[in-house]
Length: 413
Image (tube, rainbow, N blue to C red; front, top):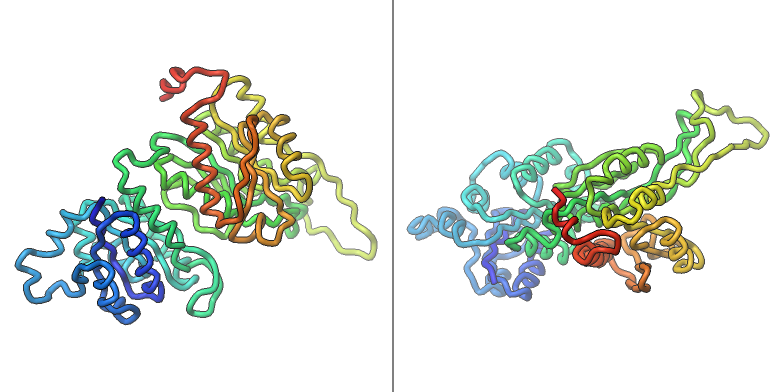
């Protein structure tokens, strides 16, 4: 199908590049591998040569290489360049145009789409220099596949692990689509994370949402060509490159950010765990003193953003409204009641009492509840679940809903 160059740099994630190459081949692509000198400390070139049946490029000045100016010749032939793992060192070189080996020279010469899959120590990944370099590369058109979070080879736990192989391969394949993806031209607003309702300058009422599901949905939509606004409550996650991020704290902040932007969106996906209650009268100006008695808090209902969007939309076709129902009992029944009460098009219902699904874990299971029935989605990674949800959303955007005409939708600016 396409010739893809895979650049492997010097990190422990280099061993996963072998599986990435194999999966690209399984998808029908031809692969050529370029390795940095440090990459060869982790994986031998012979491994890649055996599975690609192509010589691995390891030396820009190997005898005979300059006869065809190999990095120039390859740069014109490839359809995509993937760097996996992309270390802090290689990211810095690419960002600043340093071409001191074959891979960095190839990056400067090629005009093919570029995909980067960072992998490194957590503090290194979160360092302002690395973040700035990734932002610079993304601004120039490179697609960054955000790393996963978990136990790292250095013994730390946190973000920095090479993204799952499926996510990396999917990102490359989407860059190969001539139409830019099946959501190209669509505008999506996605909410994610918790909200924090301040009690005083020290304390707040919140929930256990990590934001992983909403961030996965935003990343999936960006990968498929959508223009995404991600309205995020307080999270420690790296936002997907290419999304416009609006940071909020409280339910009132979330309400203002979403309602002020919803009319510009083709779809609104409310994955955030927005607080239902907030302290009446707002936060205290000083820390609430501790005493030996009990403390009574008076809470008042927050605005229901999804219900307001449904009421404001009326019988119109846009935006498509997707809500989430995090329940601990009667999950589907409660989700269906929510679908009807809020005027939504789809509710993603999940049982957050499960230890392996819902809040603050890497996996999730859900039931998609719509007017015409339910679809069960088994336990899987949140990115895979996001892919299934976005597939359904894509179909809804293409097929439309009663209340508006396809011609009217086509005429949207």
